[in-house]
Length: 184
Image (cartoon, rainbow, N blue to C red):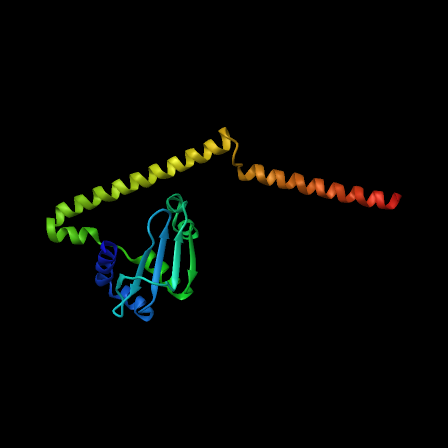
């Protein structure tokens, strides 16, 4: 499986990451993402991963709003993942997701040389940044459209004002009810 090959390449380059996974050897992680087939990986004894079948000890379901949440930041992205199962393993996977990085430039420099690798990696980072910026702008435009044009969503200020009005109405009804009880 291509995903486990790439992940194992990252894990082999980072001994600390394999060390964090070793205590969970034999456990299976299942990642579900919308219409894609579920991805099941078993943690091997050396802290690497391999394709797996069967029951998972940890299920991570990526919600449809994950991409837009990722554009808003890491914390928002983590909220867009439902976790079910081994909580210790889930926390280790979160640590790995935060800190495990592919040193693309270093790998490219072995093949292309330092200068070409640096330029290619810089271009790649700029392209990714451009796509994330575009995604953030599109998400903002859709949000504005749903709030201002279609009136499907409401702004926080409007909801707070509505809540305050409802509280005032509730208090007024309570006062009226007490007056009626005194009269009756």
